[in-house]
Length: 79
Image 1 (spheres, one colour):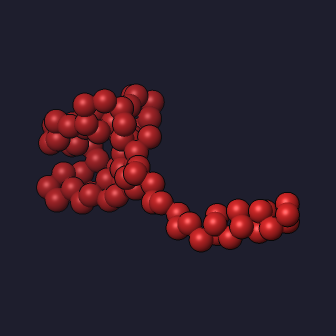
Image 2: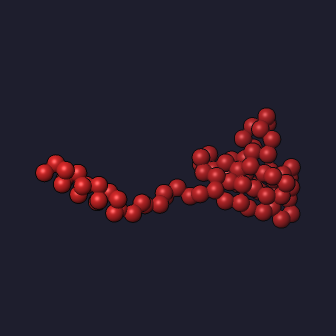
Image 3: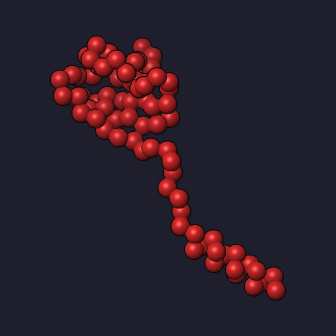
């Protein structure tokens, strides 16, 4: 009886499809007219994380998304 209930439980767990995370994934954004050094003047939604972390920025109101600038492209990921 226990074996049957274990098999039913396992088959139910294997049959359940995984739900994708509600958390957004990382994305890239091209900086058309800006370089990494001109971001603070060009985009009000980005602010430097720290002076010691060159090319790292927080995006948005809070600190939910962090971005790294590489030449003329931002790579942003949720925290």
